Length: 328
Ligand SMILES: NC(=O)C1=CN([C@@H]2O[C@H](COP(=O)(O)OP(=O)(O)OC[C@H]3O[C@@H](n4cnc5c(N)ncnc54)[C@H](OP(=O)(O)O)[C@@H]3O)[C@@H](O)[C@H]2O)C=CC1
Ligand SMILES: C[C@H]1O[C@H](OP(=O)(O)OP(=O)(O)OC[C@H]2O[C@@H](n3cnc4c(=O)[nH]c(N)nc43)[C@H](O)[C@@H]2O)[C@@H](O)[C@@H](O)C1=O
Image 1 (cartoon, helix red, strand yellow):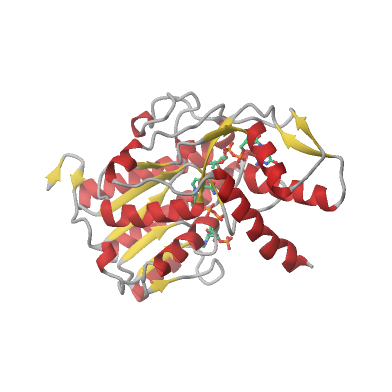
Image 2 (spheres, rainbow, N blue to C red):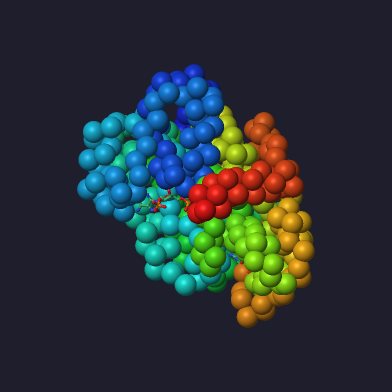
């Protein structure tokens, strides 16, 4: 049914098309790899996957020829330039430029080559720094952004708006999901450029291995963050592909928030580090709080399943098997 914000498409067809060709962009990353696992678990048999070196998504001509040749039926866009507070603050040109290029190329080529439905992924950093908590979808563009990640946020907001514009003008089924802070297998464990959870897991692990007395944690410890295991996010992405076809983006959160101090204590316990924490207040805190209101997704029928404690233990096991043991 057409309305002023575009067209509501037929729901429920995604899950019944197990042999439809699906392009998961960014399939080796934290999110893309979880989506591939979930699709394979659900019996999807026709995934098209390209590594960064096989297909540079910032190249408009390469993306065009990929779509002309492969003609995917569905696209899930999990490729992006991603990083934690330090990377966002240090490489603003990359975070705005690369992300605008990737998403613009993919959204436009997917539309022009007849893709049936596309899921774009943004992030909770699209919301104003001092948004009401928990943050409803309607808080978008109601106030100034957090300076440490405004460049990335602007690119993500442009992605949401591009999906909406193509829906209005072309009645094309492009939807957007806004995940909260994620973690899990295949995360980036870089000491400076990663997000807080993998950064701390690695730092505590190395401190334990080296019998260090203390571990440095950035900022004041007071910011609050909401964490969602990436397998829950992947489940939500498949759910949205099947059950959602709307103009507005959809928040995907766990509803569970902890202070960075509480998170550090939890990771310390899971890793088994016995020393003390030292806070480096020269490092930025970023947004004081960003708990998303995920009631819209809940009202559609989706809720997360993995607790932070279970998710942390599973991720640490994965880190030991796939990062630590492979280095030895
Ligand atoms: N991680 C998080 O906490 C959150 C993530 N998200 C969103 O989820 C999505 C995925 O993030 P995440 O999985 O964490 O990120 P990762 O960095 O783990 O994965 C991103 C993937 O994109 C690929 N990629 C990047 N640039 C290019 C390019 N030019 N051409 C082809 N492939 C490219 C990367 O390949 P390579 O490594 O080879 O460059 C990588 O496989 C992003 O849109 C992000 O904004 C949203 C909220 C929170
Ligand atoms: C998902 C989201 O992620 C980013 O925003 P962020 O939530 O601020 O991300 P973060 O995980 O890097 O930090 C969370 C908090 O944790 C503190 N902190 C302590 N010690 C370490 C530490 O060692 N590393 C990091 N990275 N942070 C640390 C840090 O100072 C901050 O207070 C966006 O840029 C953007 O990418 C985005 O959308």
